[in-house]
Amino acid sequence: MQFSRTPILLLPALALAACTVGPNYAGPPKTLSDANGAPRFVRGGAQVSPAAPTVAAWWTQLHDPLLDTLEAQALAANPNIAVATARLRQARASLRLERANQAPSANASATYLHARIPGFDFGGGSSDGSASAVDVYNLGFDASWEVDLFGGRRRSVEAARAQSEAAEANVADAQVSLTADVAQAYVSLRDVQRRITLSRDNARMQQQMLTLTEQRFAQGAASDLDVERLRGQVETTNGQIVPLQAEAERYLNAIAVLTGREPGALDATLTPGGAVPLPPAAVAIGDPAALLQRRPDIRAAERQLAQRTAQVGVADAARFPRLTLLGLIGLGGTRLSDISPDKLVGIGAPMLQWNFLDFGRNRARIHQAEGQRDEAEAQYRGAVLVALRDAEDALSRFGHRRDTVASLMRSKASADRAADLMQQRFRAGTATLIDTLDAERQRVAAEQNLSAGVASLTGDYIALQKALGLGWGEAPPAA
View (cartoon, rainbow, N blue to C red):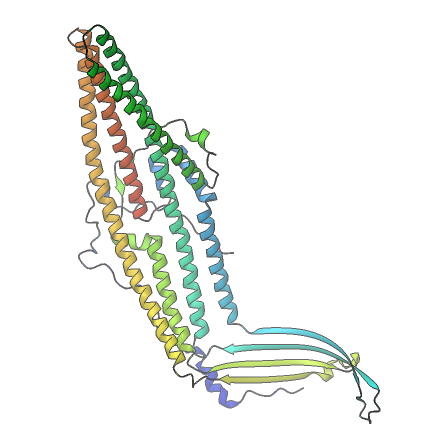
């Protein structure tokens, strides 16, 4: 057996295999100016620290064991996380496929053919119109390999790797959104449950005031207007409880679905009211540069930019010649005994292809890929600016909300003192019961406002954690 040698003229082409056309990715563009690149946020206040925050499980700082349990259940069973994880597996499989495409492809075959052809003599004699039969036996092995002369395959692997890393960042981004949504729904539920309790207390006090006013009216010490005014207040307060109950049920449904369960599955666990969890006294936020490296959506945008840059090289490599090495080994004949090593046939066929006359098609594909790269770069810049704005907005709201809560606390303390003083005057006989109940009603209203303010403060803390890109853990291991 003798194989044809590779023509000497192909050796320079093989030497080009180390060449890679297209732009090399040099990292994301600079997006922080010297002024904004300072290691601090513009809207950070005294309650925040430039220390590096904890990336995962920030909700544990709220010190609510039930919330911790709900977050763990959501991360394990939420369908959106499952969707992002499935897409990550697809991207990783695409990367393995592109790596495999760099290697030769080989096929083995075994063939048996029986043919009966009338009017033909396979023995070489004259045909007398009778039919002849022939058997063919063959074993074969063929292989092909496209030499990556100009790096098109390598650029494809580079693009697939960036796509896989972008999918990994998307999983983390889904975790960030999910953990924030669970915490927001939980805090909103606790706030509504607290408002229901306070509204019922308020309605009960107003009912007592109405009863006393009706008694005074019967004695001629109150007017019809006083009675009707208080009766209207009682009905208004009772009417406000009904939509609050519907709102609580909506949050119960939301938390159940976020944790991967059907609505109503967590009613028994969450219906007993609880306190709204409070954020920590000091919050670590890091700096803008660390934010850009940490936020998953920015990392995904940066990896998409890397992918689009590599695809420019893929398009550019299509302009140049393609060298494919083909090989075939076979043995066989018309008898089974012909399948023997001494009848081995080998063929080697290098093939060079070059579509040099394409009337600008490849150049158009390169311009298209360059436009997609420029689009990805603009999207990355936009993602950075949106992330910085989100962080600054969240810091501003969180800082001002603290001031609001401090004011509500002072208002609540004042209402408590007024109610206590009215109780003392009532016991001394210098104030009526109606005045005492009215002071108590104002105290309950101040407590409602404070409860809503605390819930908003915790909600702003949750929004800050989301804006900082916190709440994601390790990506699923590679399959």
